[in-house]
Length: 197
Ligand SMILES: [Zn+2]
Image (tube, rainbow, N blue to C red; front, side, top):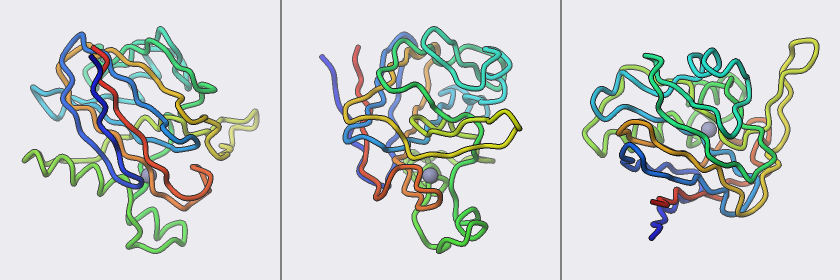
């Protein structure tokens, strides 16, 4: 039986996922970017790594069948299915108080970096640094001249990415509250993590 963990607009959730378990990150209302991290339960310093996964898959945008790896090149997440248009940015840093200042937004606006630190702190876990998130549903693509193009997320309500954990991990998802670049097409709407099996 599946179990749904709701992510309220602009906030984050952390769930423990055991090796072999299948989860879906669900874009419940559409057009919501969901910053996603995974940390090894055994050692927080080993985490899902965008740069290692780009090298492992030889892709900038991952797709079903790809196995995403940790900072130690160990399998962490296999992408089983994706009902969205399939563009999930792997390049952008998480939004933060500092990035808000950089882009001219109010520093006090909520942000994914503080969301991540907050849900980890609730578990008594402190992070040495903030890994690059896997920005699910974020429509950022590299153009022919090497520049990046951001557009509002094209994900529809109910779209999901289905993942299988390849090790025991803490999965963190933040329904990005950023107002910079209109990546979530207006106000944050929230999302959900669904434990399938
Ligand atoms: Zn964000």
